[in-house]
Image (cartoon, rainbow, N blue to C red):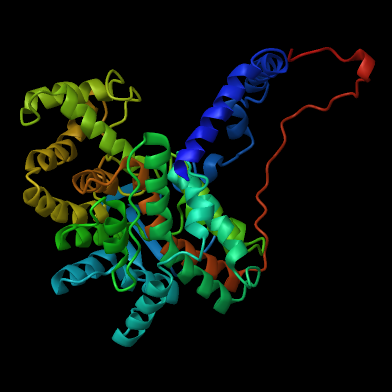
Amino acid sequence: MLDKLKMKKKEVADAKASRGRGKGVESESLYKNAAAILSKENRIAEDLYIENKVKRGLRNSNGTGVVVGLTHIGEVSGYAKDEQGNKIPKEGKLYYRGYDIEDLVNNVIMEGRFGFEETAFLLIMGSLPSKKELNLFNEILGNHRELPDGFARDMILTAPSNNIMNKLGRSVLALYSFDDNPDDISAPNVLRQSLQLMGYFPAIICYAYQAKRSYYDSDSLHLHPPIKELSTSENILRMLRPTGEYTDLEAKLLDICMILHAEHGGGNNSSFTTHLISSTGTDTYSAISAAVGSLKGPKHGGANIAVIRMLNDIRTNVKDITRAGALDDYLVKILKGEANDRTGLVYGMGHAIYTKSDPRAKILKEMAKKLAESKDKIDDFLLCDYIEKNVPRLYAEVHGKEINMPANVDLYSGFVYDALDIPNDVATPLFATARLAGWSAHRLEELVNGGKLMRPAYKTVQSKQDYVSMADRKTRFL
């Protein structure tokens, strides 16, 4: 099947190349000219935002988020405020339904078990499950590990995507057609849909990745069926790897990554997207697909990939990553925009809310060290540790000012994904698989408390125009 698709792909590419002249050239000219003109004309001067007291990006002048709602689900605490509203740095805290994330994770580690499913239950249902409730929850997820009949063949293998997030979003929308009651937004039905999607996501992302490897990268196609009795993280590693093999440490570390990514206080872009779309009364598949689209954006969900690429770049360009002087020299180049992707950013450092520490990074760092020791990657782990401890100092030297710059979760989740041999293509889809628990909880909360269609306001700065007849109009874009 995929061989036939590759032939079809070549035919389409040849057809596009042979189309060549005429309308194609005119269209390209229109696009380029229009883009240049519209980019200039659509630009809004910065002082107009200040003059009109517009909070760009839903942010206050001090960088904090504009409060647009209330939630029971998550809380992020990264600073206090003085009487003037200025930030006072403090150790970061993250709470799921009022429970400290450190307590949740430490209990899972202490008992040597998987905890993502328990965390998902907590976020969606509002309380920690009893043993009986968790067993039923896991059974429901297990019964939906396998995709509907024909779905993998028709929706994933027949139309592979070069971007797994794109395929994930399309697959979620397609599942609407496999639901006998897709538009019912009552709480029981939305809960059913949410748990079914949680069961389906691992197979979707893993099959989409395998199809991408075969179709675009000409690699062998490995399809392992999910096993209903396995945890989410075990099924993901089993279906991702050609041999289907994984260790208990690997699966439990991925499980902790998923716990830490399951929710982040409701103020993030994709969770807000879930509230926004759900407020229209639309179906679950449309709302979750929109959240996937939000997370696909590199400003939101792609930071762990950026960390992986940055670490690879440092290893390539610094001959001995155990030498502090050599590392300092190269990190300074990165901060000056002279190395890596030349943005001047050291990925995995700093956060919009956390000022002294990111609790997720603290938790993950401890587990990452164990993984590094088991895989003989301790030097790579120590590279992350060096970045965490020294980049704030180097930033101050380069830019002449000190800022709060704690390591964030992406620094160590990027290392963990790399050490687990998780492909870059799958890093953000894994994030989505974990965050689906939070999205589902936020959707249910919006529907229960809804009734108000979210309708943000924009103030126009366009001057009024007199109508011009067709005969008097000038050609602008050609």
